Length: 380
Image (cartoon, rainbow, N blue to C red; front, side, top):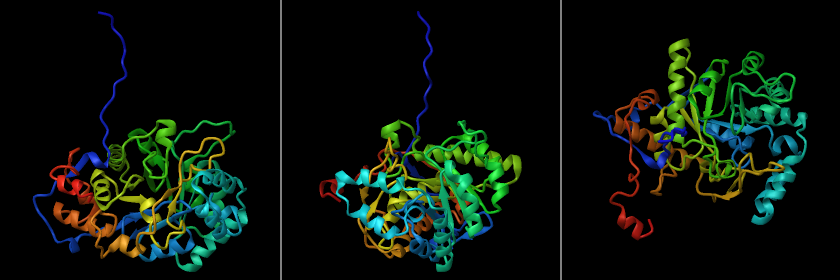
């Protein structure tokens, strides 16, 4: 028989294919602790808001801070390219569907103005927000020092795929270990989905890792490029790297599952998969306080030659407080996210996020369909 080589593959799982197993002991939800530690700060909820212009502006960041989370502002967005970001946002929101991508490309092709970086960070601080800002690796060497000097509390270096080693035509590319030493504020990097890259990134001294390539509702990277790993598997692999790095160094580096979370159930599964927190985009874009006016678009939308996203309509569903804490009357898990997390932790007997990470998870592709015929028949 002729012998030949074939590439090995393993199964990977997303949120809809797994389920959390209840614990042997249960506790009252109000006894659970859902705090999230990032750098020197303790946040009262384990949720970050995505660095997307439809989600975070200074006003939203302030409201999110007040509710205990951390919102990240995009330093390569409308707030640093245009003197009137509100007017630009309205142009995007009001654009016909077949005209929006060219408009996005034009809006985001404007040059980043350094004086606007300090202005928007100053406004956030004046309003009382914890200031977290984000830029891609290509602009980090230029923008990160400006952000730190302006008083930013966190810097997020974020791209579709981030590695510790990037080859380019630049004489000297970005070095995360040097960035961490230079800024003197916590640095979070992402996105990644693999054990080896996560481990290498943690060894550079960063304070957090974002996990997820292409799962966001406004992102089409998986369709355009074919690249990505389902979020449950990606989170588990990166969490394994976190545990190995903790064993080697004694330093705990949190991981944040970024993208693909559509309900409280998905949030809970991300935590059980090993996440310390989650980053939300479209769910928060539906908040009444979000600047996108009921729309959401990703950071890869405006690429001048290869757009990898689309503007999606999420609607203005509810006030931010109701999305995070309820009370709610909707039954689809899109509101009272913290209530869902606390209830699931209670059912698993987990007092803390760290204990919730130890809960059992099983492969269960029928978890949302088993016994639900009447719901489907009635369109529920």
